[in-house]
Length: 180
Image (cartoon, rainbow, N blue to C red):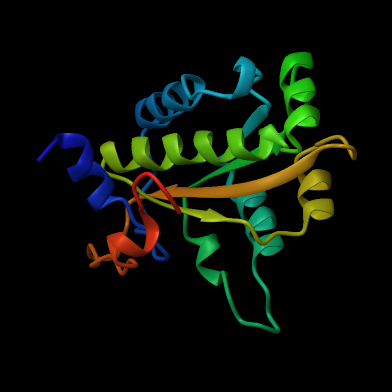
């Protein structure tokens, strides 16, 4: 089995983190993997904001948690938050998107997020993508311009959870050959 497939099998959404800082060298390598992620027409329509300051992390974590529905409270544990902001695509990507009816920056942000999470796993870290957040509050906390979209907050840290078995659909439910 390839080492890449082994890496993919190890990657999981971790929802508990040890009280241990992440080394700057590991963060740098993860950011390098993000920097190398492909995007439509090489638009690279993202900005990644690294949040490690305790006070800012707690404020950002508050925007991802919901007291009424009681979820995402673990976001306060992660020592690193990567906030992914959608940037404008280049002309070619925008034109291609108009022609095909697709918004390529959303696809591109998914690709860069996958690179980040797989790189984190390779560094021995846990990660979790958080899509639920109060964008307006995050924009204020991190001085993000009002016209920008906060797409994801990715948590990074040393996982406090064991590796879990993956529950997936059967392969024949998601893959076909030569026809739908």
